[in-house]
Image (cartoon, rainbow, N blue to C red):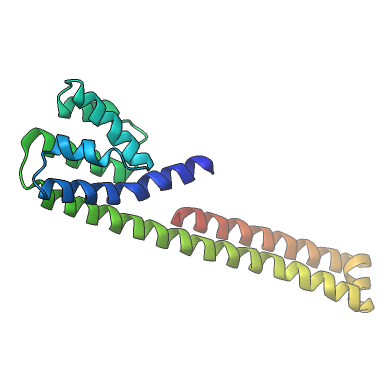
Length: 184
């Protein structure tokens, strides 16, 4: 869970850093100067930019400094940011506009991810209610009606009905869990 939160914090920090880089380069600074300026911000992605900026200040070419921070576990937003910065460092171009577009793309991806998380949370709550409600109603009914309690607890047909209901409820829970897992 901590790792997911850290990954989310990192992904949420990417767009503001790209925006700051775009503003800085639009103000006339080079990409290396803009990285040094943005690297002083707090935030997980800004800290990674600080490493790149420090290596570049020590004489490492900017594309090489950027390549050193790439890693296989990077999320799609982080890969987009590194790819964008790498292309701009190697080939130049319309740096502020490119960084703006990358920030917009990252924001859109973050918004979609938040919508998926919200939908999955709603689905988990629905699954819990749909699975627990029959159990609660059954216990309440057995506790308040002697005839039903006698049938369920002392008759073979009641045992079969209870077993079938428990089995179907469990299958329903598994199906809903798989569906929820597929949406996140």
